[in-house]
Image (cartoon, rainbow, N blue to C red; front, top):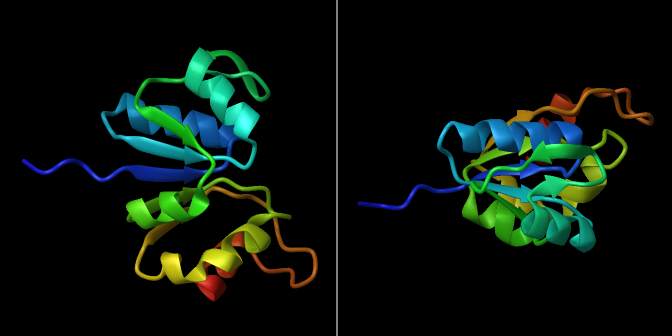
Length: 126
């Protein structure tokens, strides 16, 4: 029997954490990437996102990580819950790892310089 490939959730905010929890609650292995190592460690140790979802238990199926390269390399399905102001900057250096992946945009807003929707930016860089 093969091991299930993890689903990636990019973003350590309230929405990214809620989606990661929802996926884990439905039996999926989830790798949740966030930029802050202290936040990832707090979630790993306390099973709670103290900055954005205090008092809500983060399920054991959610693995908080800070290595974006490894996260993208290991997953075919990627939920993107990054701030709109950071999306392009965070993902552009990893464009080679996005090709062929299923990307689901959870990010609201438009890019200030181009007026593009987040889904359009994902199309541009993937």
